[in-house]
Length: 375
Image (cartoon, rainbow, N blue to C red):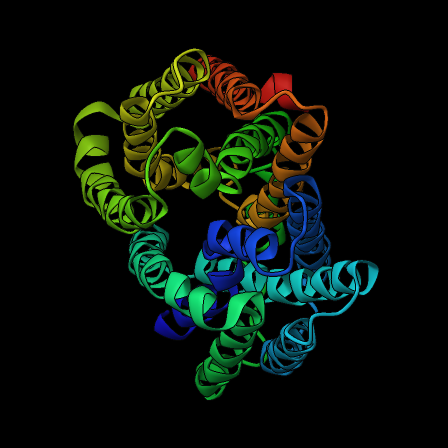
C-alpha cells in the first residue's frame, strides 16, 4: 500500500504545482495568461490519455516494468521542458509529461483499489497529497524566483526519478480484482457513469480556479507574497477534510455530506464572481481547500458503492484528466475574450452545481435500488 501511495504522490506533483508554474510562465518566459493556460491544459490532456490507456490495460500489465518506463519518460520530458523550448515544442513536451505521469497516477489508484481495505488506503493517499501540496506550494515560489519555470520542471523531474526507489516494492502481476461471478453482480453502468461525470464536473470547477488561483489573488489586490502564504497555509485546511470525512460518514452517511460540500463550493465561487474582493478571495480559497479532499473521499466512496469491481476507480484519473484539461482551457478561452477572472469563477461555480445535481441522481437511483435502470 505504501509503495502505491508514494507512487501517487510522486506522479501528482506536476498538478500540485500548477498555480506557481502558470505564474512562472507568465513572469519569466513572458507567455500571455491565455497561452500559459493552454500549456497547462495540454499537460492535463496528457493525464487523460495516460490514465485511459492504463485503465484499459490494467489486467494485462506487468506493473513494475510499466511504471519504471513511465517514470523515466516523465522525468525525461520534464528535463527537456526545462530547456525553454519554443511554444509548440513546449506543448508537445508537456503532452508527453502528462501522459506518462497520468499513467503512473492511474496505476497507483488501480493498485490501491485492490487493497483489502480501500477506505483506509485512499484516506492515507489523500492525506499524503495534502502534505505534498503544502510542501510544493511552499517550495516552488522560491524555485520560481531563483530559476523560473526551468527550475520547477527540473525539480519535478528529480521527484519522478526519486520515486523509482519504490519500484522494488511494486508487484509485477496483480490478479484481476473480481471473479466473473462477482463482476456479474456489480454491473451498474448508469450510476457509475453519473459518478464519473460528476467527478469531471468537480474537477472542471477545481481546474479552472486552481490554474489561476495565484493570479486571482493578485487581481483582488492581495500582494503576491501573501497570496503564496495563503495558498500554502490553505492547503492544510484540506487535512481537516481528510480527518472529518470518515467520522462524518459514520454519522450522516455519504450522500448529505457530499451534496452539502458541493453546494458550498458552488455558492462561494458564484458569490466571488459577483463580488471579487480580497476578503472574498480568502473565503473562496479556504472553502475550496476545506472541501476539496472531503469531496474526493466521498466521491471515491460513492463510486465504490455503486461499482464494487474497482473498474470505476481506475477511470477516475481519466475523468479528472479531461476535466483538468477543460477547466484551464475554458479559463484561457474566457480570458482571451477579455472577460476576466469573475467569469472564470462563475463558470467554476456552475460546474460544481452540475456535479451536485449528478450526485443527486446517483443517490436517488441507488435509494430506489436502481439496478434495473442501469442496464
